Image 1 (cartoon, rainbow, N blue to C red):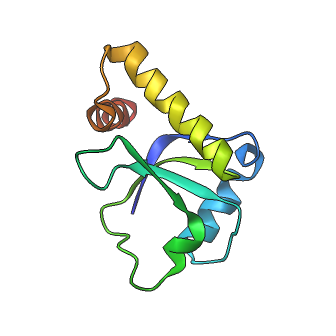
Image 2 (image 1 turned 120 degrees about the vertical axis):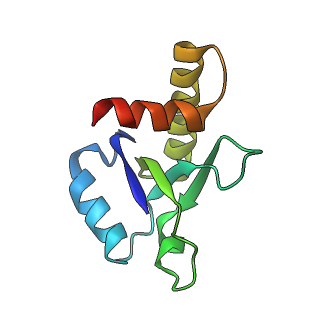
Image 3 (image 1 turned 60 degrees about the horizontal axis):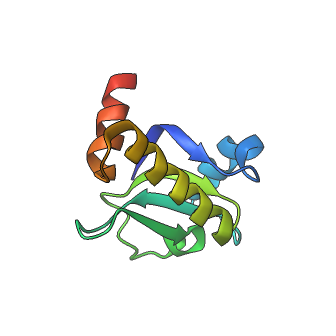
Length: 108
């Protein structure tokens, strides 16, 4: 599981980002938190995953690249829309994976 350098954050988790991130990494329960990741397949742009799913022992966490955190599903939808909008404004296209990966490399 990798974390984007500059996470997109919903307003309800902005002030507790470190705590939420720690809980996800340590399999602590969070019912109302959603993670936004790069899509698990090339057909989609992003995946929205409830954080409680990540607690499951056999959930495929390997290869997840988390780009955002939200406090509820509707906030996650809005955040995903903002990410896609940012990508479109910057590139004129919808290649979210390339944009996010390139952005992460520039910041390091």
